[in-house]
Length: 145
Length: 145
DNA sequence: CAGTTTTAAGAGTATTTTGTCTGCAAAGTA
DNA sequence: TACTTTGCAGACAAAATACTCTTAAAACTG
Ligand code: SF4
Ligand code: SF4
Image 1 (cartoon, rainbow over the protein chains, first blue to last red):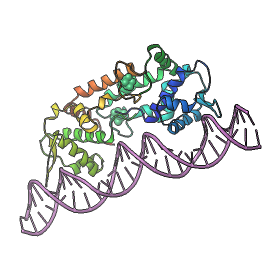
Image 2: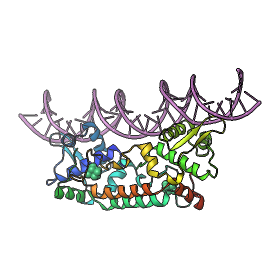
Image 3: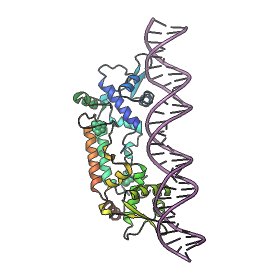
Image 4: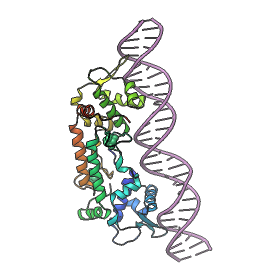
Protein backbone atom coordinates (compact mmCIF):
# COMPACT_ATOMS: atom_id res chain seq x y z
CA UNK A 1 0.00 0.00 0.00
CA UNK A 2 2.25 2.77 -1.23
CA UNK A 3 0.40 6.05 -0.95
CA UNK A 4 3.26 8.48 -1.41
CA UNK A 5 6.24 8.18 -3.72
CA UNK A 6 9.72 8.37 -2.27
CA UNK A 7 9.95 11.92 -3.59
CA UNK A 8 6.99 12.97 -1.48
CA UNK A 9 8.20 11.09 1.56
CA UNK A 10 11.61 12.71 1.37
CA UNK A 11 10.21 16.11 0.48
CA UNK A 12 7.80 16.10 3.39
CA UNK A 13 10.41 14.96 5.84
CA UNK A 14 12.73 17.72 4.68
CA UNK A 15 10.05 20.40 4.94
CA UNK A 16 9.12 19.24 8.42
CA UNK A 17 12.77 19.31 9.38
CA UNK A 18 12.93 22.89 8.16
CA UNK A 19 9.91 23.83 10.21
CA UNK A 20 11.35 22.48 13.42
CA UNK A 21 14.63 24.37 13.09
CA UNK A 22 13.41 27.67 11.73
CA UNK A 23 13.45 29.70 14.88
CA UNK A 24 15.52 31.96 12.67
CA UNK A 25 14.51 32.46 9.06
CA UNK A 26 17.92 31.32 7.89
CA UNK A 27 18.47 29.20 4.84
CA UNK A 28 18.76 25.53 5.65
CA UNK A 29 21.56 23.66 3.90
CA UNK A 30 20.44 20.78 1.71
CA UNK A 31 23.61 18.92 2.61
CA UNK A 32 22.80 19.21 6.29
CA UNK A 33 19.27 17.93 5.75
CA UNK A 34 20.42 15.02 3.63
CA UNK A 35 22.80 13.96 6.39
CA UNK A 36 20.43 14.50 9.29
CA UNK A 37 17.54 12.74 7.56
CA UNK A 38 19.72 10.09 5.89
CA UNK A 39 18.50 10.90 2.41
CA UNK A 40 20.67 10.90 -0.71
CA UNK A 41 21.98 14.44 -1.15
CA UNK A 42 21.57 14.63 -4.91
CA UNK A 43 18.12 13.12 -4.83
CA UNK A 44 16.94 15.46 -2.12
CA UNK A 45 18.43 18.38 -4.02
CA UNK A 46 16.32 17.56 -7.02
CA UNK A 47 13.16 17.22 -4.97
CA UNK A 48 13.72 20.56 -3.29
CA UNK A 49 14.44 22.11 -6.68
CA UNK A 50 10.93 21.10 -7.70
CA UNK A 51 9.53 22.84 -4.65
CA UNK A 52 11.65 25.89 -5.37
CA UNK A 53 10.49 26.06 -8.98
CA UNK A 54 6.93 25.85 -7.72
CA UNK A 55 7.67 28.86 -5.49
CA UNK A 56 7.10 27.00 -2.28
CA UNK A 57 10.74 27.51 -1.36
CA UNK A 58 13.41 30.04 -2.21
CA UNK A 59 17.03 29.04 -2.55
CA UNK A 60 20.30 30.79 -2.07
CA UNK A 61 23.74 29.68 -3.23
CA UNK A 62 27.16 29.96 -1.73
CA UNK A 63 28.35 29.57 1.85
CA UNK A 64 25.50 29.56 4.37
CA UNK A 65 23.13 29.14 1.46
CA UNK A 66 20.32 26.64 1.26
CA UNK A 67 16.57 26.72 0.99
CA UNK A 68 13.93 28.54 2.97
CA UNK A 69 10.17 28.88 2.91
CA UNK A 70 8.81 31.43 0.49
CA UNK A 71 5.54 31.67 2.39
CA UNK A 72 5.26 31.00 6.13
CA UNK A 73 4.78 27.30 6.92
CA UNK A 74 1.51 28.20 8.61
CA UNK A 75 0.13 28.80 5.13
CA UNK A 76 1.51 25.68 3.46
CA UNK A 77 -0.83 22.71 3.51
CA UNK A 78 0.18 19.12 3.01
CA UNK A 79 -1.99 19.04 -0.06
CA UNK A 80 0.13 21.76 -1.62
CA UNK A 81 3.24 19.65 -1.24
CA UNK A 82 1.83 16.46 -2.71
CA UNK A 83 0.16 18.34 -5.53
CA UNK A 84 3.57 19.61 -6.56
CA UNK A 85 5.47 16.37 -6.06
CA UNK A 86 2.83 13.85 -7.16
CA UNK A 87 0.76 15.80 -9.63
CA UNK A 88 -2.58 17.54 -9.52
CA UNK A 89 -4.57 14.34 -9.89
CA UNK A 90 -3.24 12.86 -6.69
CA UNK A 91 -6.64 12.45 -5.07
CA UNK A 92 -8.43 11.44 -8.27
CA UNK A 93 -6.90 8.00 -8.47
CA UNK A 94 -9.03 4.88 -8.42
CA UNK A 95 -8.68 1.75 -6.37
CA UNK A 96 -9.21 -0.62 -9.30
CA UNK A 97 -7.36 1.57 -11.77
CA UNK A 98 -10.25 1.98 -14.17
CA UNK A 99 -9.99 5.08 -16.33
CA UNK A 100 -12.76 7.61 -16.67
CA UNK A 101 -14.27 6.70 -13.35
CA UNK A 102 -17.19 8.57 -11.93
CA UNK A 103 -20.52 8.62 -10.21
CA UNK A 104 -22.50 7.63 -13.26
CA UNK A 105 -21.16 4.12 -13.69
CA UNK A 106 -19.03 3.42 -10.64
CA UNK A 107 -17.17 0.21 -9.98
CA UNK A 108 -17.97 -1.95 -6.96
CA UNK A 109 -15.44 -0.27 -4.73
CA UNK A 110 -16.62 3.20 -5.43
CA UNK A 111 -18.79 3.96 -2.43
CA UNK A 112 -16.20 2.82 0.07
CA UNK A 113 -13.24 4.26 -1.74
CA UNK A 114 -14.91 7.64 -2.07
CA UNK A 115 -15.12 7.89 1.69
CA UNK A 116 -11.50 6.98 2.26
CA UNK A 117 -10.31 9.41 -0.38
CA UNK A 118 -12.41 12.19 1.10
CA UNK A 119 -11.01 11.59 4.57
CA UNK A 120 -7.47 11.62 3.25
CA UNK A 121 -8.04 14.73 1.20
CA UNK A 122 -9.75 16.47 4.08
CA UNK A 123 -6.80 15.80 6.34
CA UNK A 124 -4.25 16.95 3.78
CA UNK A 125 -6.25 20.08 3.07
CA UNK A 126 -6.51 21.15 6.69
CA UNK A 127 -3.06 20.28 8.02
CA UNK A 128 -0.31 22.85 7.63
CA UNK A 129 3.39 22.20 7.82
CA UNK A 130 3.54 24.47 10.85
CA UNK A 131 0.89 22.44 12.65
CA UNK A 132 2.79 19.24 12.02
CA UNK A 133 6.01 20.92 13.05
CA UNK A 134 4.45 21.97 16.33
CA UNK A 135 3.33 18.42 16.88
CA UNK A 136 6.89 17.28 16.37
CA UNK A 137 8.29 19.65 18.94
CA UNK A 138 5.57 19.06 21.51
CA UNK A 139 5.56 15.32 21.51
CA UNK A 140 9.14 14.87 20.35
CA UNK A 141 7.97 12.74 17.49
CA UNK A 142 10.55 11.37 15.18
CA UNK A 143 11.37 12.17 11.59
CA UNK A 144 14.41 10.01 11.07
CA UNK A 145 14.86 6.23 10.82
CA UNK B 1 -1.86 7.82 -4.65
CA UNK B 2 -1.35 4.27 -5.79
CA UNK B 3 -2.82 1.94 -3.18
CA UNK B 4 -2.89 -1.30 -5.17
CA UNK B 5 -0.33 -2.57 -7.65
CA UNK B 6 -1.41 -3.44 -11.15
CA UNK B 7 -1.25 -7.09 -10.18
CA UNK B 8 -3.85 -6.56 -7.47
CA UNK B 9 -6.03 -4.40 -9.67
CA UNK B 10 -6.04 -6.98 -12.43
CA UNK B 11 -6.38 -9.89 -10.03
CA UNK B 12 -9.35 -8.36 -8.27
CA UNK B 13 -11.08 -7.48 -11.50
CA UNK B 14 -10.61 -11.03 -12.73
CA UNK B 15 -11.93 -12.55 -9.53
CA UNK B 16 -14.96 -10.27 -9.58
CA UNK B 17 -15.55 -11.22 -13.18
CA UNK B 18 -15.49 -14.86 -12.16
CA UNK B 19 -17.99 -14.23 -9.39
CA UNK B 20 -20.48 -12.57 -11.70
CA UNK B 21 -20.46 -15.39 -14.22
CA UNK B 22 -20.32 -18.38 -11.91
CA UNK B 23 -23.91 -19.40 -11.96
CA UNK B 24 -22.32 -22.70 -12.89
CA UNK B 25 -19.13 -23.81 -11.19
CA UNK B 26 -17.42 -24.16 -14.55
CA UNK B 27 -13.80 -23.23 -15.10
CA UNK B 28 -13.41 -19.75 -16.49
CA UNK B 29 -10.92 -19.39 -19.34
CA UNK B 30 -8.07 -16.99 -18.68
CA UNK B 31 -8.04 -16.01 -22.32
CA UNK B 32 -11.69 -15.06 -22.13
CA UNK B 33 -11.11 -12.95 -19.04
CA UNK B 34 -8.09 -11.22 -20.54
CA UNK B 35 -10.17 -10.25 -23.57
CA UNK B 36 -13.30 -9.22 -21.69
CA UNK B 37 -11.38 -7.19 -19.13
CA UNK B 38 -8.78 -5.91 -21.60
CA UNK B 39 -5.85 -7.19 -19.59
CA UNK B 40 -2.68 -8.68 -21.10
CA UNK B 41 -3.24 -12.42 -21.32
CA UNK B 42 0.22 -13.47 -20.19
CA UNK B 43 0.31 -11.00 -17.34
CA UNK B 44 -3.09 -12.07 -16.10
CA UNK B 45 -2.05 -15.69 -16.39
CA UNK B 46 0.87 -15.07 -14.08
CA UNK B 47 -1.28 -13.26 -11.54
CA UNK B 48 -3.84 -16.04 -11.48
CA UNK B 49 -1.04 -18.57 -11.13
CA UNK B 50 -0.11 -16.84 -7.89
CA UNK B 51 -3.65 -17.18 -6.66
CA UNK B 52 -3.72 -20.82 -7.71
CA UNK B 53 -0.46 -21.58 -5.91
CA UNK B 54 -1.92 -19.95 -2.83
CA UNK B 55 -4.89 -22.32 -3.10
CA UNK B 56 -7.40 -19.58 -3.65
CA UNK B 57 -8.12 -20.93 -7.13
CA UNK B 58 -7.87 -24.29 -8.81
CA UNK B 59 -6.88 -24.61 -12.46
CA UNK B 60 -7.60 -27.10 -15.15
CA UNK B 61 -5.86 -27.48 -18.49
CA UNK B 62 -7.06 -28.45 -21.89
CA UNK B 63 -10.20 -27.48 -23.79
CA UNK B 64 -12.84 -25.90 -21.56
CA UNK B 65 -10.19 -25.56 -18.90
CA UNK B 66 -9.45 -22.44 -16.89
CA UNK B 67 -9.55 -21.41 -13.28
CA UNK B 68 -12.25 -21.72 -10.63
CA UNK B 69 -12.63 -20.86 -6.97
CA UNK B 70 -11.25 -23.41 -4.57
CA UNK B 71 -13.43 -22.10 -1.77
CA UNK B 72 -16.77 -20.41 -2.34
CA UNK B 73 -16.42 -16.67 -3.02
CA UNK B 74 -18.61 -16.05 0.00
CA UNK B 75 -15.61 -17.09 2.09
CA UNK B 76 -12.94 -15.12 0.25
CA UNK B 77 -12.28 -11.68 1.65
CA UNK B 78 -10.61 -8.85 -0.18
CA UNK B 79 -7.86 -8.92 2.40
CA UNK B 80 -7.04 -12.49 1.39
CA UNK B 81 -6.46 -11.41 -2.18
CA UNK B 82 -4.21 -8.46 -1.45
CA UNK B 83 -2.27 -10.41 1.16
CA UNK B 84 -1.38 -12.92 -1.56
CA UNK B 85 -0.68 -10.42 -4.31
CA UNK B 86 0.89 -7.59 -2.30
CA UNK B 87 2.43 -9.41 0.63
CA UNK B 88 1.51 -9.92 4.23
CA UNK B 89 2.67 -6.50 5.31
CA UNK B 90 0.22 -4.70 3.06
CA UNK B 91 -1.47 -2.82 5.89
CA UNK B 92 1.70 -2.20 7.85
CA UNK B 93 3.12 0.38 5.51
CA UNK B 94 3.84 3.89 6.66
CA UNK B 95 2.93 7.19 5.12
CA UNK B 96 6.38 8.73 5.49
CA UNK B 97 8.21 5.49 4.76
CA UNK B 98 10.09 5.38 8.03
CA UNK B 99 11.19 1.90 9.02
CA UNK B 100 10.50 0.39 12.40
CA UNK B 101 7.51 2.58 12.99
CA UNK B 102 5.29 2.14 15.99
CA UNK B 103 3.37 3.60 18.84
CA UNK B 104 6.38 4.30 21.01
CA UNK B 105 8.01 6.94 18.85
CA UNK B 106 5.53 7.73 16.12
CA UNK B 107 6.10 10.25 13.37
CA UNK B 108 3.83 13.29 13.02
CA UNK B 109 1.43 11.59 10.67
CA UNK B 110 0.90 8.60 12.85
CA UNK B 111 -2.39 9.39 14.57
CA UNK B 112 -4.17 10.29 11.38
CA UNK B 113 -2.64 7.58 9.28
CA UNK B 114 -3.54 4.94 11.84
CA UNK B 115 -7.19 5.80 11.43
CA UNK B 116 -7.13 5.63 7.67
CA UNK B 117 -5.30 2.34 7.69
CA UNK B 118 -7.76 0.88 10.17
CA UNK B 119 -10.73 1.91 8.06
CA UNK B 120 -9.19 0.41 4.96
CA UNK B 121 -8.26 -2.78 6.72
CA UNK B 122 -11.69 -3.07 8.30
CA UNK B 123 -13.35 -2.78 4.92
CA UNK B 124 -11.05 -5.29 3.28
CA UNK B 125 -11.52 -7.71 6.14
CA UNK B 126 -15.31 -7.64 6.04
CA UNK B 127 -15.99 -7.57 2.31
CA UNK B 128 -16.18 -10.86 0.46
CA UNK B 129 -15.81 -11.36 -3.25
CA UNK B 130 -19.37 -12.66 -3.32
CA UNK B 131 -20.67 -9.50 -1.67
CA UNK B 132 -18.94 -7.35 -4.21
CA UNK B 133 -20.14 -9.57 -7.00
CA UNK B 134 -23.69 -9.18 -5.81
CA UNK B 135 -23.20 -5.44 -5.79
CA UNK B 136 -22.05 -5.65 -9.39
CA UNK B 137 -25.10 -7.54 -10.51
CA UNK B 138 -27.57 -5.48 -8.49
CA UNK B 139 -26.43 -2.06 -9.49
CA UNK B 140 -24.89 -3.07 -12.82
CA UNK B 141 -21.64 -1.53 -11.80
CA UNK B 142 -18.82 -1.71 -14.23
CA UNK B 143 -15.58 -3.66 -14.16
CA UNK B 144 -14.14 -2.77 -17.53
CA UNK B 145 -12.70 0.46 -18.95
C1' DC C 1 40.94 38.16 -8.63
C1' DA C 2 41.47 33.14 -7.27
C1' DG C 3 39.47 29.71 -4.60
C1' DT C 4 35.66 27.67 -1.89
C1' DT C 5 30.95 26.66 -0.85
C1' DT C 6 26.61 25.84 -2.24
C1' DT C 7 22.46 25.16 -5.35
C1' DA C 8 20.97 24.30 -10.58
C1' DA C 9 20.63 21.41 -14.41
C1' DG C 10 20.76 17.56 -16.88
C1' DA C 11 22.80 13.21 -18.23
C1' DG C 12 23.53 8.73 -16.69
C1' DT C 13 22.74 4.32 -13.86
C1' DA C 14 20.18 0.96 -10.92
C1' DT C 15 16.13 -1.15 -9.32
C1' DT C 16 11.40 -2.25 -9.40
C1' DT C 17 7.27 -2.79 -11.71
C1' DT C 18 4.87 -4.04 -15.60
C1' DG C 19 4.32 -6.47 -19.63
C1' DT C 20 5.90 -9.99 -23.53
C1' DC C 21 7.54 -14.16 -25.57
C1' DT C 22 8.73 -18.98 -26.11
C1' DG C 23 8.58 -23.64 -25.03
C1' DC C 24 6.56 -27.21 -22.25
C1' DA C 25 3.05 -30.09 -19.75
C1' DA C 26 -1.55 -31.52 -18.97
C1' DA C 27 -5.99 -32.50 -20.70
C1' DG C 28 -9.32 -33.15 -24.30
C1' DT C 29 -10.64 -34.75 -29.32
C1' DA C 30 -10.58 -37.65 -33.10
C1' DT D 1 -1.70 -42.08 -31.59
C1' DA D 2 -1.63 -37.45 -33.63
C1' DC D 3 -3.42 -32.96 -32.87
C1' DT D 4 -5.61 -29.11 -30.52
C1' DT D 5 -6.57 -26.47 -26.50
C1' DT D 6 -5.49 -24.84 -22.44
C1' DG D 7 -2.57 -23.51 -18.14
C1' DC D 8 2.61 -23.55 -16.27
C1' DA D 9 7.19 -21.82 -16.02
C1' DG D 10 10.76 -19.07 -16.72
C1' DA D 11 13.44 -16.03 -19.62
C1' DC D 12 13.18 -11.71 -21.72
C1' DA D 13 12.02 -6.66 -22.58
C1' DA D 14 9.99 -2.16 -21.79
C1' DA D 15 8.68 1.44 -18.72
C1' DA D 16 8.52 3.79 -14.50
C1' DT D 17 10.75 4.93 -10.38
C1' DA D 18 14.61 5.78 -7.57
C1' DC D 19 19.09 7.17 -7.19
C1' DT D 20 24.03 9.00 -8.82
C1' DC D 21 27.36 11.72 -11.14
C1' DT D 22 29.29 15.57 -13.57
C1' DT D 23 29.46 20.20 -14.92
C1' DA D 24 28.01 24.75 -14.44
C1' DA D 25 26.58 29.01 -12.11
C1' DA D 26 25.89 31.90 -8.20
C1' DA D 27 27.45 33.68 -3.92
C1' DC D 28 30.83 34.29 -0.56
C1' DT D 29 36.00 34.60 1.41
C1' DG D 30 40.39 36.43 1.53
S1 SF4 E 1 -16.03 4.14 -9.88
FE1 SF4 E 1 -14.92 4.83 -8.03
S2 SF4 E 1 -13.59 3.12 -7.42
FE2 SF4 E 1 -14.33 2.70 -9.52
S3 SF4 E 1 -12.74 3.50 -10.91
FE3 SF4 E 1 -14.19 5.17 -10.60
S4 SF4 E 1 -13.42 6.35 -8.80
FE4 SF4 E 1 -12.39 4.36 -8.82
S1 SF4 F 1 4.86 6.37 13.40
FE1 SF4 F 1 3.01 5.85 12.16
S2 SF4 F 1 3.10 7.18 10.34
FE2 SF4 F 1 5.13 7.22 11.32
S3 SF4 F 1 6.37 5.67 10.30
FE3 SF4 F 1 5.41 4.65 12.06
S4 SF4 F 1 3.41 3.84 11.32
FE4 SF4 F 1 4.15 5.29 9.81
